[in-house]
Length: 208
Image 1 (cartoon, one colour):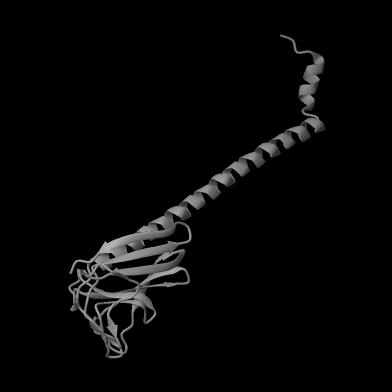
Image 2 (cartoon, helix red, strand yellow):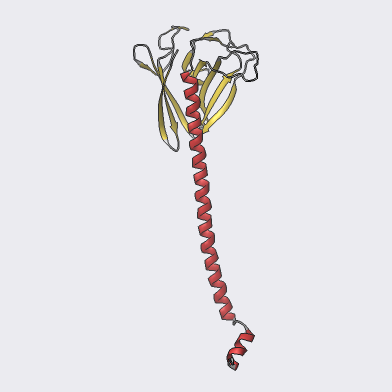
């Protein structure tokens, strides 16, 4: 087969400038479309990961709340100021929304300490904070160990159910001066106000 002379000459000469410009333009458009699609996928992946992480943190916070509340024990403590404090204290007590004594503190290393633990919760800078003390009866130098459980927390609302099935927003419910009746609520309702999921409400039974 013989190639015509004009076609052979054009093949030898290569593409014209106009053809190169058109080819580069088409390649640039396809590259922009591909980058835009890839960028959208990466943004969606980041949003999904952030959503999943926040959901996991909120679920973890609820698990900690459940473990602490459902293992409440009727054991008061002594504060760093030498005052007697009830087993459960709520309504912004010393900077915490709730403070309680719980059992079941694991001790795999067999340290010389109680299996009971004093814990507290607070919301600071849109973060849910869990605090605990290494001792029950605190001295002046006893400091709380604080851990952040979840971000994006707008507030924490707590209600207490007494023996007469009445709800209270603070505890102890029967307070006279600085003294209160030594009493543990029958149940505690927790409402976690989150930025992403709204208000999440859980009811925990207290078994003493």
